Amino acid sequence: MSVTLAAIIIAAVVVALALSRRGDDAPSPQPPVRHSEDHGAGPKDPTVRRSGDRLAGAGPEDPTERRSGDRLAGADPEGPTARPEPRGRPRRGGGKGQPLVSLAAVTALIYLNQVLFTVYVVRVHHGSPAFIARYLPTGWFALADAPWVEAAARWFPAPTVLAPSVLRVQAFLELPFVVLAYLTVCRWFSGSVYRRALRLVPWVAASYTVTFGLIEWSLRNPYTWDDLAIRAAAGLIVPLWTARLSRDAADDARGLPGLLVFAASTLGLGLLILVVYDTALLYNLGHLVARLPIAVAAGTVVAAARAAARVVPKRPPGRGVDSIARSFGWFLVLFFVPALPVRYGLNFGTAYLSAGAGALIVVAAAWYGVRDTFAVTPGDAGAWVRQMAVAVAAGVCGGAAGLLLPGGHTEMRVLQGGAAFFVCAVAACALLDRRNAR
Image 1 (spheres, rainbow, N blue to C red):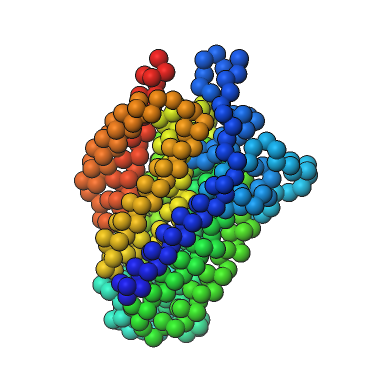
Image 2 (cartoon, rainbow, N blue to C red):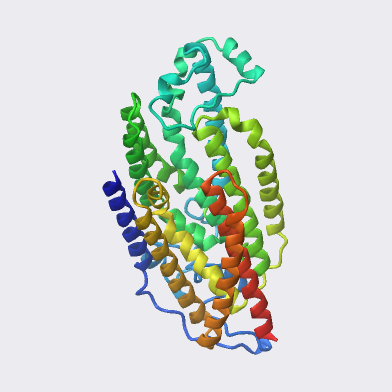
């Protein structure tokens, strides 16, 4: 299995990097021009027609989104010569909803299936999940024993029809759950990153479906063949689903305030995702009461952060913060395809390859982000290197502190550490940008 998973990781990384290279032969941004009304502000890229068109993490986009060079992740801007879209024509896939709304609907279906699964086990298997638990690792099937569950089990008229609630329903819902969660984060970050991520969904669905199928095969049970067929169907349906999502997204993560709000939003959503995995996707509905305070706190953070995202100032950032924002935007795009294989590789015999793949993605994202930043705001490279050294040092200190915080799962500790690294690095860069401006 480790050899197959290693091949999946390598293929996913190659695909992600190859897609990022498509469009690199497009015209590069024109030399920056200083306008008389800037009053000493940094040089501007003339391909940007208004300040709101600059999106964190990516260059300015062709507003028609129809040129071939811009249809793939990483496409360079094509400048102001693009033919404008006629008024009144709807944007492709627009107006059909946000990924967060679809994510909430999928989460509700996951928990509904947990209730039906519990009813099935109580009525058909006398409350014991041993018939399926013996095929899976420890840590699964902590059933809820609340009075309302018993009442629902007694009331349900035909419990045998709930047999598909055992593994099969989750096999379909798991792919849209992870894809929609990732798209939600991308949309919170910037519109250009979100639209580029949407174009990658077919590749992502293929990568994740093969990975899920490999994990299914390693945990063979009486439902494995059903699950493999269901996951294959989900891999075909999810790209069609996401193609109906709206392409519109606000440019929220601009400058220090926007990036801090984005970090809070992502941290809260990540905690909610981990709660869903523990209590629902592992069939541990009995853990829900204990995890409820974490879920409520995380949901409150997300709600407050998204409300703040509408009012925080969106001033153009300094060069240091801009380079971090652009690099992180590229990371979100590049990491989308190999994310799931890399994550499972840490637990299934390819930890070093997963770590190397992650490091390669980080280096590539930093390269693209810095390239884009210097194309728009050229300056002293030596001063920038010194600024980044301070920012990385601050991020490492913050990330180490985040990793040391108590957390139940490895993923939770990594989430805490990553959020602390991001916040500390961005804050240090913002302070140095202000000092350099003075």
